[in-house]
Image (cartoon, rainbow, N blue to C red; front, side, top):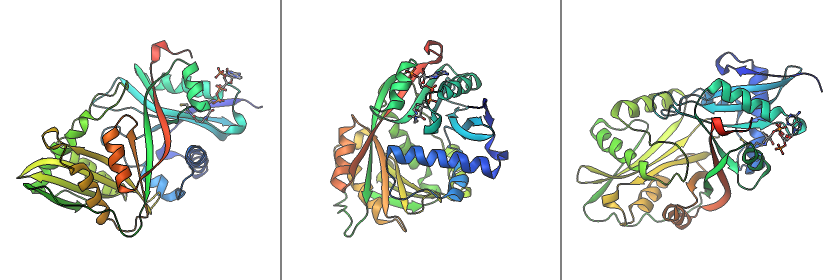
Length: 323
Ligand SMILES: CC(C)(COP(=O)(O)OP(=O)(O)OC[C@H]1O[C@@H](n2cnc3c(N)ncnc32)[C@H](O)[C@@H]1OP(=O)(O)O)[C@@H](O)C(=O)NCCC(=O)NCCS
């Protein structure tokens, strides 16, 4: 084996060959964890990667090279304004180069670069070798997520009757101005979702944050569908779907939240069912829910979702890791 070098990779200036190597590694990693029903497209993936998440920002990458060829990476999000104690990411090494210390070097390098107090890894298949590797280095399992998907077929699930006193609003792209405040309030209802022992503090939403996110998603070619439930003019619940150019036939069902005063009335299921009716060009919907979140998992099952994979999130104080 030649000399293995580890260095930061700036995606904005990365060569096409490096981006392709990174893409190939990510695709293998995702598909070994959960065989995809639609593989991502390289150009769409590049474009999606350049859209910052409103809370988490853009991912940073460190790569390991053997004779210039990328054979492993560590990726990490370093939130800039809230949760600044935290880096969350993953380490992936090409199967043929495993067991030679490459993963450990990447972890060490990435954590030094990140310089954060707490490190978390997300979406690691439960019970697999990657989880064991992280546990041996001092990470602990913080929670488990169940990944579910729904193949859209006719007829779509019934929406049912909107309970009296409530109404639904629905849009794609940007929220109408007159609904923006209610939308911000509804998104804040996500803050009591179970997160197990993760050390993520709830992110806050504001009118400016929401508009910023809408602009960034639009610029990155990400389609957004929203259903908002209102009680009078007040927010009662919300659900959001994204679709990126990376996999145009796959919708990603993101936040669904019902404000506590409005729970127990079937609104969660109702808004998710309504959302499915407005989609165009989507054949499969994917979502992930904390495995202890019985309500949401039951709602998803009633809409026809099936459980595909359980992943774990791992967490550690960096100072306690054995590096
Ligand atoms: C987890 C993963 C990143 C490990 O990559 P790797 O390059 O094999 O990692 P390492 O070589 O550093 O460690 C693997 C083993 O090789 C051993 N090893 C062999 N030679 C070594 C050397 N020269 N230096 C250090 N460790 C060495 C390590 O001790 C380690 O054994 P241990 O876990 O019992 O301590 C890799 O399996 C992977 O890509 N999995 C899929 C992604 C994943 O699950 N990531 C989750 C973690 S965030």
